[in-house]
Image 1: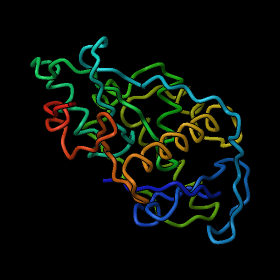
Image 2 (image 1 turned 180 degrees about the horizontal axis):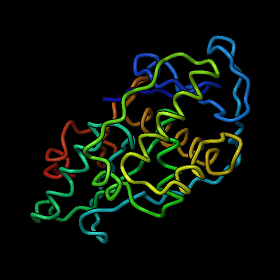
Image 3 (image 1 turned 30 degrees about the vertical axis):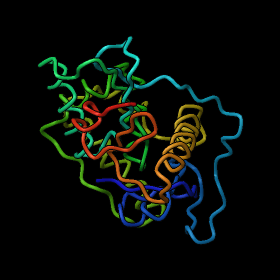
Image 4 (image 1 turned 45 degrees about the vertical axis):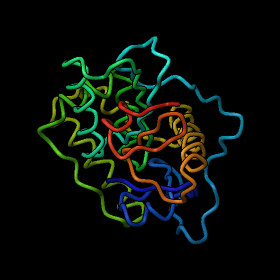
Length: 228
């Protein structure tokens, strides 16, 4: 289960305990390595447009009752929730609800995968079917350039090992100065602000399930909730 909060720094950690203290964003290509203690924000996302459109929708797209599920694309627990949603939809168990999936980048691996999904024009649900037999191990918590490069190389090797096209994998290598990466961080900041306000917590676990500003521990509880 992935934990996160709203502080934004230069370096992106793949260690969940470190990430629970702060989201650490790196420039995978050219930014100098800095410690989290003395870091200044690398990216100014002020004014960056953030779409309110979900990454995927399940259930009845016209339903008045909406459940929002926040997921990280490299989180095994999140993939399990997605599988539960797909199974319930197939078995017509979702009822009169719409489930909106919002992907949030919690580490550099997530940024890489999200950029690949965009380049390949495929959904997260389709990607999980392709990648389900391979698990991406969390990267080392070290933040120097060598470790950053190692993280990128390991993620690249993993994507190639599950059959992702070489050209698209190479085109998806993160560069935190580019519009896509900046837009994803802006999306992260906006949604985490909403989540922390809703939950009144400084630390959140993904996957995170919300219906009408109420937090639910399970998808079934959210679906069966009385909105009155």
